[in-house]
Length: 126
Image (cartoon, rainbow, N blue to C red; front, top):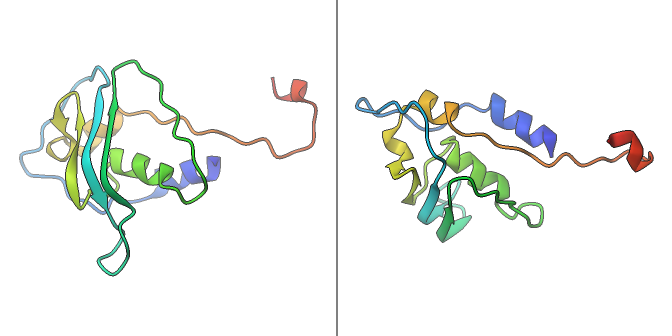
């Protein structure tokens, strides 16, 4: 899990910033995925089709599901490492495609679950 997070930090976005992109100093944190569809390539099936998700400012959300279920892809879309095929992602009402990438990334934080895989007492990890 933590290795995937490190992969995200090394990944170069496959999107371009608009010339008229705006900078936001801070956000309250409301995030909306609106009718999102996505596929990696035209010859591959859709990963998401019509996904809607509303995360209110200050709300904690856990993305839970099987490996390959799209949890990391939702984060990659939010970080704008990819753009959706259709639909939009809003942060405080701003379409993230209208924001400067640096500004977006400065205002988004991701906490990954780190799975303990060593046989040790739980007390060793507190």
